[in-house]
Image: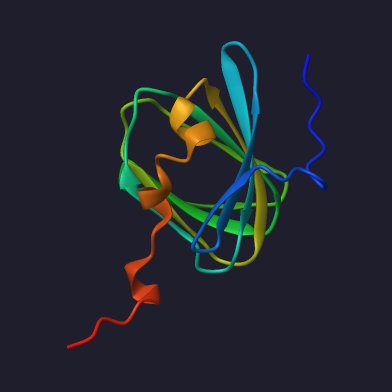
Length: 123
């Protein structure tokens, strides 16, 4: 058994306004996600189903070409193998549940939350 206190959880991945802490079980995991306004997730798909629950805020999620605005006390199920992306319309707190995915613990999927609009390139 493992106990997680999200107010004092220091092991979080942080990328361009996207902050994620994870609770890991034997077969399942849950992400505690904090999003700043404008934080993105670029289009991608994977073999795992995800269930998103928004605790506070507004999160625009595009799944298979359909756009959803998920607000506090609403959930959205993202099917496996379906392309999806997102943008936080305002500061958002959400919980995302899925099968065990090591890339969440390792933060090897950081590039999904990399917003190139936040950078200026020298000419």
